[in-house]
Length: 154
Image 1 (cartoon, helix red, strand yellow):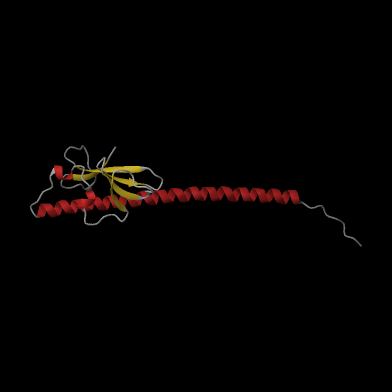
Image 2: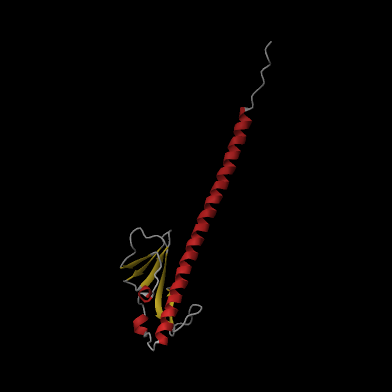
């Protein structure tokens, strides 16, 4: 005896599969955007940490010079490469260049044309800082000492 044929529900299972794949794709896309955002935040925090460490190095330089009776003149520091004054350079400092170095991502370099310390993010945008005396500024970073600071170039 033959069993009666049951109609197969291929259409419904394919539809369910398509919906499931779509939901998974949306979740994966949301996860990727969240990871990119988190990676950008980590990079920004790392850059800010480097900047704070450089500012502390400049404070240390000022304190040492002040304690030994030496001083920093405005002409000595204005638009100079702050890395030259530091004992500890950031690991991702590449040196002095007249233009942005090729394949620059997540690095510091000193722009010799504009006399600015530049951070190049992995997405290509840049922040520029200048070493200057704070006497002619209306503000300085938190904890600036000795009238010198690394200031974001607007």
